[in-house]
Length: 279
Length: 316
Image (spheres, each protein chain N blue to C red):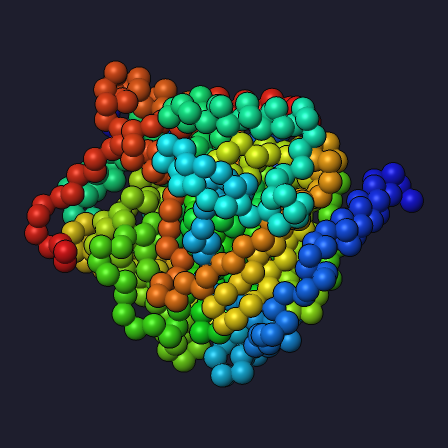
């Protein structure tokens, strides 16, 4: 076996372990037990439709007081039980530096990559406030996001191992999907480490692995869970959970982030300089 | 400057933008700009060449008897004609010569009103290439999307087209009324209906900010677009686009793709990511050209205010 193939196998094993170790709360009380979703023609739970997070997660995944332009609110971290992201000490310091860098209105000087309209990453793209549509074909789930016309194509059958992270590293990672009962589970690997989780500076390294779980709780309520594992930045895996609401009145429209910069007269011609990730 | 001179200049703009639009397979490797972004084009990798497509057979059908468009399609003929220039044009400077894609009028020329032709030619100038939304990694226009392979699928009454650069179009065949006029969209509001084995897509509510091609072709926000996806057999779709816009054109006109849209083998994977904006190192060059041509007024002219033509003929 070539070394590269071996790496794929190791990576797949790591993903599998991450999947097993994640979501302890869900394991105790499977979500969506009381609701049986309709099935697609392929026999999969039908999660299709337009969904939206109407919550404060985009500001800060942890409980927080009010800040300029930011309402106070509870957090979304359900594991650990204290609701805090389990940072290692150096990473916690880095998070604070990240947030301190978010005060400049000039996109080029602002530390938050989203202010530059860079890809939000996973899971942030789920709850930045714009809706997304889930479209299920037999072998692939498309999630089309209104924000800057992004999308993710998630294979759910005939799933190959993810590519070598040295060959492919993405802002949104590389997704691999599967069905667990009525839950769509998406294992995400191959991150480039540049995306943040929210406007509070929460972050990861390229070693990040994200396991997302999409479960219908009722006809118009979709539970979203994501478990983050990154031994370079956190002391242990951590999990967020929130409910997304079905948007019935209109489909996906458009929000072209860079065009909004254009409208403001901001030229997005800054140099594309990406320092290697610190962690 | 003569029109020919202008055209040659515009070709250099084309080369800048060609670096952005690129060929999917080559993009990721060729355009890296640090780890965070490159000029790669997302979309299916592999498949297509080498992978087998079954021979053409009868039209595949869904449970309701309508054609099943599920699959990967390409009408570009392997070249980027649609993204460069829609009418007959000479080759050179990296652009392949091409015939017109306009099938009506018969002379193959887009029937612009005089003011609009002047505006099209202004946009075509090299100095104004910075105004092209594709250079900013913003939405390709519908005609322009026909130059790239795309995946189609069905979701209930919706026909979904997964285009290049993360662009998705969701075409509802159950809706009858367009969105309120106050909602304006880059790719408009598409409503589908069936005429036999043809999917007819009716689009309004455009925002008028897109270009149909690098060569500056455009319509206004009041345009009414009708696409026809006519399935001929299991491997062939004939596609046409009819543009009606009394504000810009003397009469409706119709274009098609370079080739009939042919079925490709399914993509090998979708692991690539479009990072056009994250790696957009070319935009600054387009802006430099723009600033040089317009002096210090370059920035002051931004964002551009496009001529709207005579006040007659509009529907809004």
